[in-house]
Length: 508
Image (cartoon, rainbow, N blue to C red; front, top):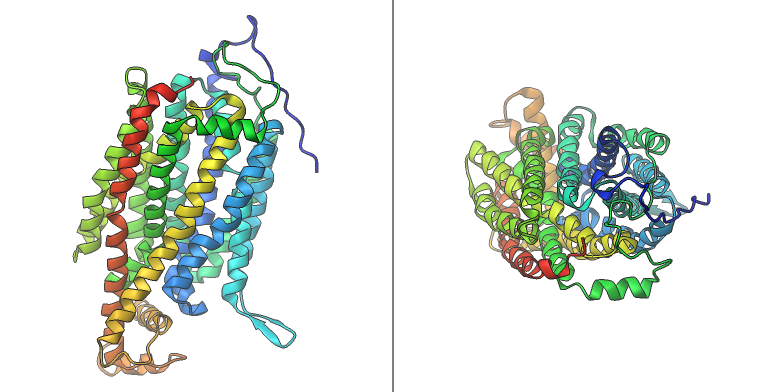
């Protein structure tokens, strides 16, 4: 299918002035909400894997390192490499169609993730882990076509003074998607299994893709930019790259966003595991009591940061970056409290406060990206940002967290006389077995019930070994989370450097 080409329209005296934006206020609000919905689905499908972490790991039998590969690098592989070519296509072709096609594809690949299982090919058996990894790579390929065109559309629908608020509103998709994945995916996984969660949350994206195409208009490029802004006939990839290289504020912001993503994706990928391992919760309990409230707080914080940045932007051009830096720094003590608390409510409140103050940097990264480059390079600038952020942040953050967690587990195992022969997957399976039995019986197994229950596992362990699993699983994940949290300091410093250059580099 050949996507329709989009012409560049120069504004004249009869054209709506840039202060008004494209379309009526009501229609602009509708389009922004449609783009938000697509972004929500983006993060529903992306974040669902972490929500169903323990039951999935228990069935597929993988280590924390392999889990980090699955949740991070597996997704980021094609998400990053396909992002720039798709964004270049979005510079000249219909952005709405590109988003719709990509949305339908990644939704179907999410459904396929729920069907992943061992496959026999001739005399070989392909593990369900590799099947699921291929599905996650497919999800990443589809989602590569979501964010760059959306940001370019927002820049043409909303004038410069309204963009921080609009992009901040759109950026809530990150936390709202995570919220929805937890609210629906967790309980579904508890009652119907983790596979059903992928089926139920994946299919709606196909219907949304159809509605998006039928109801969303493609605006003229550069419509809301001031009339004096140059409109070159064509910008080559080399010219676009050279323009990016001349914007230090963009690169400092990219560094800050990358480090923040490295930390954030690592924490999100292992947060549910930490909660379930430390407090003996089911996937649904961890999702509803902890992750969902935290995601809701993050959505509210992202929106408030966008509104504040818009209010301060005219007087302080670097405000959006200063606010992002402050939020990242403020999140550190809350995360430390959450990951060291022995009380459920202290952990839940601290986690929500960390999300509330931290996620404003997402709106900041997109606002800075759209503000420091010309209109013809906006989708490409967003794609370059996401390439770096997701390759390093999403690709390596969860993997690093898994490696650190497994190394800590191995260290504890080497110091224990009862842990010989244990593996991480055996411990996960044992905890899942006991949690499931507790939920069905409403009480934890006691006395002779626990050894009998552990003896039913495919790889039986003793009650003493189960005690080691409880301690080592929780402490190793905690160590990984605390180490990663400390890196937010570097992200905040990079946003400070971006703020100091932003007044000079802003184009609109």
